[in-house]
Length: 79
Image (tube, rainbow, N blue to C red):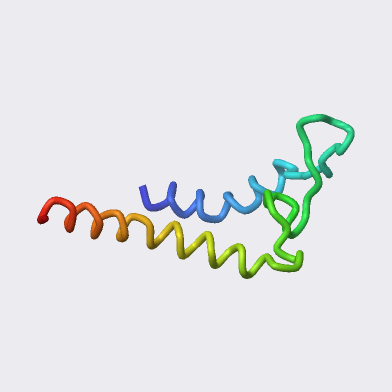
């Protein structure tokens, strides 16, 4: 059993090297591949002017709305 494990440990790197892993560049002419690179997969452009204000407004609204609704609902039910 130990001999088999030792063989696997020594043979594994050579087996992986022989498999010939390779990668090819995506074909941009295909409708199923899109441009690659930083910020290419985002539905918005963080480099545009006013992005920070829009982002923080979205974040504050998204985080604060549930809490504001909970407070409003609690006060409505008490009075």
